[in-house]
Length: 237
Image 1 (cartoon, rainbow, N blue to C red):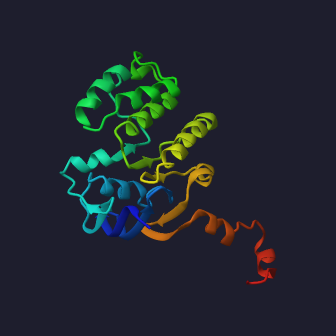
Image 2: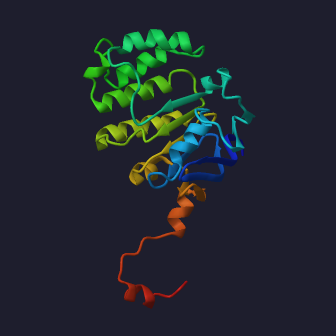
Image 3: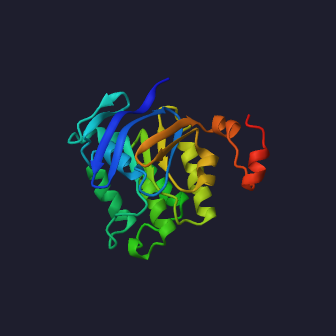
């Protein structure tokens, strides 16, 4: 099985927090959901993958290659969507297209305009007039328009209404129909992960608890709501 993303022994220490020897793999053509409580290390992991922070130890490979964070070419392979859009508020989509096609050698203007049309995003309206849902759709459109092979989503669907989330999740399903493409998706919305993910990785207090196939987890685990007395009466097996 070919890996889109390989993380081995990834370690980063901050005051009061340590990401401790994280091992993680994301096969090509799959979606990996990254879960954990606030402060568990999800965003730290993403920052280290993107070279926005320097690891104390460990390595990250994208598409089988260890990339120097200062090398811009590999970033053509990666599309990123954070929980907030960081595009200038006074800019519009038409202007953004002109900027991004000068930044990305692989920028596909036709793809970008196709997503603008699909998401019903006005090209000449300033971003400050966009709703949160529109801003997230724009960020996703941009991330998918430079031939990225790995899409990294950091709480990209949080705060969106269910209709918008379902629309975006459908785009993610379509994206991985190309088996060379993969998604790492950090989210607190379990229903979203259940709909689209192939694998689930759980980080707790900077340590990986498990990284398993979603369907296997659903088969092997259940939530039981009962009293302590009722729990004690259940067979241990």
